[in-house]
Amino acid sequence: MAANTPDVDTFTRPYWDAAADGRLLLRRCRAAGCGRTHHYPREFCPHCWSEDGEWAEASGSARLYTWSVVHRNDLPPFGERVPYVAAVVDLPEGPRMMTEVVDCPERDLSVGMELRVTFRAEEDVTVPVFRPAGA
Ligand SMILES: [Zn+2]
Image 1 (cartoon, rainbow, N blue to C red):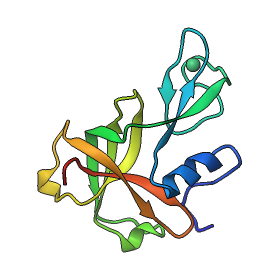
Image 2 (cartoon, rainbow, N blue to C red):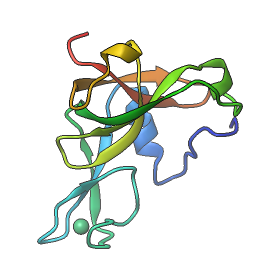
Image 3 (tube, rainbow, N blue to C red):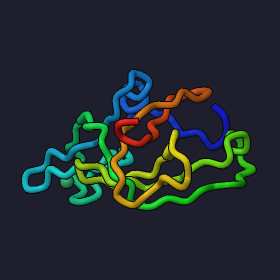
């Protein structure tokens, strides 16, 4: 596995398998009185610490919360990819997610803009990124 790409372990394997299949999975808590969804996937719920969670498929929609255009990153594989848009997006399921926005000129980025998940195959894994909805 290349440096700086996500770790895939037994717990997160379904997440990466789904991404390779074009589906974004989130972890949803099954504890009574909680039921909240979180991301990135953890083996316990960060809201109530329950370990009773399940995978749930995300709608794939998101809204842009904030971003920063990265012009320089010497860590592979990012060096070949600059500039890119490192972003935080809000998912309708609740979680806020660190990701990248693709296929969108910097001048067209705006807070709250509607995004749609898409997937980018990398060396070892497929990662979810977002592009403008309707693009
Ligand atoms: Zn919970």
